[in-house]
Image (cartoon, rainbow, N blue to C red):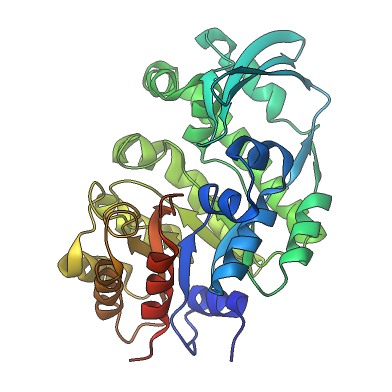
Amino acid sequence: MYTPKQRMLNAYKNIENDITPAAPEFWFFYPAKVLGVTMAEYQREIPHYVGMLKAFQKFKCEGWGVGFPKFLNDRVKVTSDYKPIRDGRYRDTQTVMANGKEYTRSYIYSDNIPYWEEERAVKDFSDVPDYFRAHINDGVAFDFADANKAYEDVGEDLLLELDLGFTFFDYFEQFMGFENAAIYFMDAEEKVLRQMQEEYTAFQKRLFAEAVKNTPYEVYFIGCSSACNLLEGPHLWRKWDKPYLKAIVQEAHGQGKLVHNHNHGKIMETVRDLVEIGYDCVCPFERPPGDVEGLPGLQKVRELLDDKVTFNGNVHTVQALILGDEETVRGQVREIKEAFRGSNRLIVGTGDQVGAETTEDNIWAMIDETHKKE
């Protein structure tokens, strides 16, 4: 019998499992609920992996989580002013001193839902290169102490992956917003962006190399915020993100490491690209409003993945888990398992994080149906 972590790794490596892994995405909502804390308390006061571990232990299933490195950077100093505003909401106003210039940004925290960014740091396009290089430079050092503690604490109960941060486009989106980032990428001189792309790739390769030397992580995680088909679009993604992603995956495989990509929204147009990049696992292949619907859609994805990339996801977090009953959930799980019958590269997961409104009965139904042997 395998441990939850071993089952996840087996799926990533195309190794036969004793049962199909069931990996609901417990990210913010359910971990906070299991711990009995507000969302603001969880996000500001509790290490992220702690809540995820408690949630996966409660439901006795497989799953993945993320450990985060720290960045030590003398060129950037951040001060924070965190205050309640109204009705269980709080504003964190931050001053960022980057290469000697002052920027402001703010975040809204809530007792009930995850935080969001109210104000982005960079408003003037002329500041972009300098702000970028204040954060992405050879003087930044990496601290893995917290990430290593998280890895040790979760043991075999959870596959903890080391976060490699954002895709190239998403890195800009985080400090200037999606609309401004999209305009900047379309209007900036190509040679300026190419230079920053090279610098970002080199920086991330250095992060990865240091992580390999200083951590025991088997899997590395690359998520997406706006760098998904639905928002960024295939053209910009292929031009600016795909080369970076391919370089990182090649670097990881050269060191015997695995890479997991989390990619929301419509995805069918670039599934072949994901295979070409060489990811070991991609999730979550969402049902509508995503574009992987029912058995035909799942079978098409399996055909495109060609057993070269592990599939994870597709149970609808709203229509099935929140609004549906146990049979609705079980029906979606059966569709997924039927589409991937005979494949070792299958993890039954959710299309996004499990909402706080989800009944425990529906979560247990998803896990039970996934674990059933054929």
